[in-house]
Structures are given as structure tokens and as C-alpha cells.
Length: 244
Length: 366
Image (tube, rainbow over all chains, first blue to last red; front, side, top):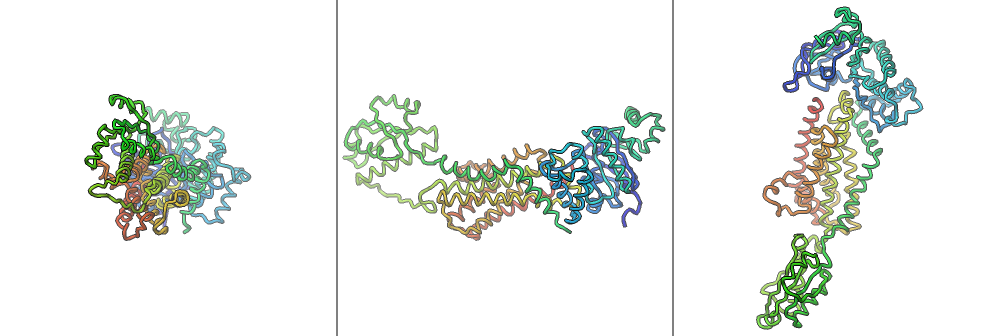
């Protein structure tokens, strides 16, 4: 059966090259189920490439990896049923109504009619948008769109959620609300794998890895990292490590 | 497992129905183009300004002039000045043709039963010049017939399939090819590239849905649109422009479906390579619009193209479709008679779909 190793995500010497460019090298990760795992790094450090390999959007060049206990080389389909993914772009259709967006993504995951109706009601209620189901998505504020996009990525109840810079361009309050949501997800036993370049968000994670030029240069709890490098905040840890 | 094609298909329909402008273009374009080609672009030229320089002033030369005056194609005026002036008529655009009757015209006619006249034609517009030449020849023939003179042999031309040589017969098949190509290739490639641009394609691809399901779901609405356009063209062609319909309508629709598939697979191939909607649009226009108009036999006969371009036309899908639709509509061709054309189109579709399906996965992976 699945998860023989017990980890939600595990990789060993995972690599991705684009021509001569080494986007990700020697990626070794072990993420426990139920963990909020932060994946930090500057733009272009290889975070997105790594997350895309784990989500089955990109084939690795070398190395091994499992997601939800399934091999990323061979068991893509099974992985896809068990993960949710949301990118910075929020990936909603602006010319569809809120309800239509929910129905579309539910349909893509093969939800039944009854499941879809239940999920739609539940999601709109959670967002406080029950009476606005027929509004066009383009007319909604960014913070709502972001939470709706997350809701759409969770319609099929995935075990592991990959969030690629989910809070990019969102105001601080909406960011805090969003992190409340992430905590609630983790409380229900889901694994959250999140990339960010906001260092204050790193403090909210159970463990963080810091990526630099395609490699992980540090991996531990935020507290341990701050202790180890004798810095006051994750921001300082990051600057300290990158400037070395 | 519930089919995941349906949600894609439904969503695509919502996109189309909410994009009012595109929808109007899709519905109005075939009608507008038909009326434009049918009425505005007339291949016949009338009221050609003809200047007659009659040096003979005999009853015979007057009869010849009257012949021209009697034709609906010419507006005749007389001129009696020096020949060195003639070119200024072309330069001032006062004449498109000049007829010079020499002073020995009637004398020669009586002596030899033949006499020459000279016609100068302004060929700065070669197509018009060709037409003017044909019209003048027709007038001369009629003049000869009146004189009772007969040539050594006579050519009697029987024109089949389009006896009145109506231009509608020629542009309706061409327009059908053009519009089906544009809808199927252009709109589908834009529809797919748009999702790559906004990032929604990625969101769909992390789901268990298969690329082929995405493609099928996305192209079905455009197949329907293309078919609606085809029907609009055929209805207007038949009932407004009186284009006959000799062949089997079911066979025509089936052959058109094969062509639509070829165009769709071309659109898919473009969409797997283009990163932005603008690039997709430029590429689609370049590989669909121009070849379909210039290299398909729609406007210019293939035989009149330079050798190298003739070779190129073998890669233009519309070339084969035009033979098929003309053959079916005007001649009543059957499947057996059009097997080569339809096979080529089918082979092209299969080839392009295989290429783009492979590329579809890998480009989304970069």
C-alpha cells in the first residue's frame, strides 16, 4: 500500500536540468504527514521547479522521489488524485461566476453531482459568499479570489497541498487570513508544502528549507535555524546564509 | 469514472458565449465576407473608357465603332489628333484602351477579306487588361460575323459546371475553406494559449485529467462553430447567389469535417509552440490565412504559380479541400473520385495530432 515510508513527500538526489542550467540539484527532503513545510528562497532559486516536479507537471532529470507514497516517475496519476495545487496566479477563470469555477474544478476531478453541490455550498458559506455565487469572478477582490482558488484546489479532499507563492500580491491582512486557513488544514491532518519569499511567513511553518541556486542550504525548524545562525528573525537568517 | 471531458467542454462554451465580440465575428464573418465577395468584388468590368482614333472614316470603320458603342463594356469617345498624344490619355486616366483604325482599313477589307486594327490597352492593372482584351476580341468577332467573314476555323467553347462563369461559384468554396480554417485553427490555438498564459492550464494539468481529454473538450465547441459557419455559407451561397448544389450534401459535410480536423490539428500544433496569444495569432494567420488565399487555388490557379510555390501548395490543406468542395458542389463528385484529396487531409490531421500531442505534454513541462 501507499506511504510505506510514512512521509508525505520524500526525495533523494532529485535533479532538474534545462540544457546547461541546473535548476535543482541534489534535492533531499523528508516531509512528515501533517507538517507545514516552508520552501524558501529568492526568485529563481529553483522552488517552483522543485514543486512542479513533485506535482507531476515536470519530469525530473535524475533522482528519486515519492509523494503520498507514490513514485514521481511512474505513479503520476495516483499522486494527482491525492494532491492539491495552487499557484501565485490563483488560476480562476475571470469570465466564469464563482459557482461555475467551483463546478468546473470539481468536474475536472470527477466529483459526482451530489458531492459538487455539497462542496459548492460549503465553500461559498465558508467564504461568506453564499449570496454571490452568480457573480463574475473578475469582480471579486483579490483576497477572496485567492481563498476561492484554494477552495477549488481542495475540492477533491487531497492529503497533500502544494502552494506555490500563494500570497504573492495580496495585502497583509488577507495574508494573515490565508495563513489561518493553512493552519486549519494542517489541523485536519493535511500536509502543506508552501513556497514563499516572504520571510515573516517562514516563521509560521513547522520546518523550513532555504534554497539557493538550486540547492538546499539549510533545513530545520525556524527556531533551530535562528539559534544555529544566531539571528533574531528568519529574514536575518536568510540574509546571513545567502551573503555567505 | 465520470467523463472529465464534459466540464472542459461546458466551460469552453461559457467562455465563447460570454465573449460577445468574438461570437459576433464568428457568426457575422461568413455572411459579411460572402456579401463582400459577391457584390463588392465584381470580376466584370463595365464602362471601360475607350478612345477611337479613326483614320479611315469609312462606313466600315463607323460600323466597327458602333459595335463598341453598343457593348455594355465600353464607353466610347472619338479622337482625331496626332498619335503622339495617345499616351497622355493613359497617363491622365481618360482611357483604358485605345482603338486605332488605319486609313486603309476599308480598302483592305474589300480587297483581301481581312484587315488589321490596333488596340492599345493600359496594362498597369494586368487583370483588367486581360479582361479588356477578351471584351475587345468579342466585339471584333461579332463584327466579323456581321460581315459574313469566317475564319479558317471557329472555336466553339462549351463551358461546363459554371456556364455563366459566375464568380460566386469560385469564391464560395474558397470562402468556406478560408472561414473553416480561421475558426478552427485560429480560435482553438488562441483558446489553448490563453490558458497557458493565465496559468489555468497548469491548474488543470495537476488534476488527474489526461491531456487528450483537455484537447477534446476544448475543440468540440469550435467544431460546432465551424459547422454553423459552413451552413451559413452554404445557405447564402445557394439561396442568395444561386450557386447550384449538384452533389451529396451529407458527403460535403463529411468532407468538410475532415478538413475541420486538419485545421484543428494545425491550431493545436501552433498552440503547443506559442507562449502568448499574440504569437499564436500571428502564427495562425501566417500558416492559415495567407496560404489558404494565395496557395490553395482559391484566387490564383496553381498552374500559374512559380515552380517552388507550386511545391509548397502540396502542404496547404485548403488546396485539397477546394478540389473536394468544388467537385462535390459543382460536379457531384463521389467519395471514390475524391479519395486522394480526402486521404491527404486525413493523413495530415493524424500527423499533426501526433506531433502536437507529444509536444503538448513536453511544452507544459518547461
